[in-house]
Image 1 (cartoon, rainbow, N blue to C red):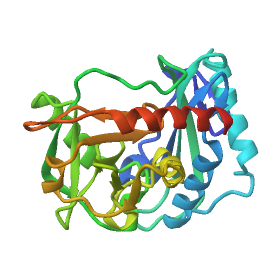
Image 2: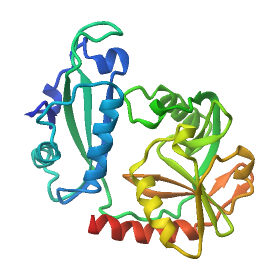
Image 3: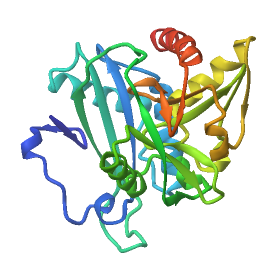
Image 4: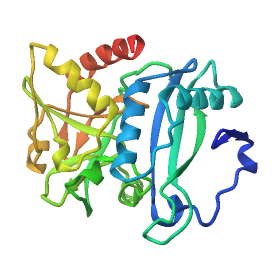
Length: 281
């Protein structure tokens, strides 16, 4: 089922106008949320990130776009899709209303919601091989727009094709200052000894929801030091551990980059704490 501005329709009956600005100009933002038994994990963080993204894109936020209303619409979509008692990936896409060229005639918005079943209600550490490579065909701009989840993700699309064509599980993206920013599907964390780092938002990395949770958890782990700092490509092969974070997988360890292999000790410890935070949140 698709939720089209509050109306539930069958997926095969849903239509997209050829004048939709999300299609024509990438003029939209989205949130992908993990739901377990109709509980939206980290919903408050998702909601405020969505509102902040809309403000940055100068969209007019409707008065009725309260956290309660949007949560209700998301849960209604889960119910209509027979996913209310299952783990699911649910996405809300907000687009600016039709009209105009680059300059919109209407700064109001519409939305649609779609849901899909996923396999695991908990965050589980995968022990399968996971190899990455740098994607250097195009760069992430080190600016605030790159930190948003917009509907313009061509860089990630072409990077995903590159990864598949070359037998990699994922790629790491580089910004225009030649620093490692993130992975195709999430934020990147690097561990060297007892020191952990992740790129700062100023480098253009996604303002990730799980990234935010780990930034709250890590200062409480006295056995490690932590910083938000730029990561050079040269640091990757000197690291003891690399892992990727996103809301669906939680924490995904990288096992290989070029000739370097990595451990998963820190990722494993963090995943336990993340599951606790997800249940309590």
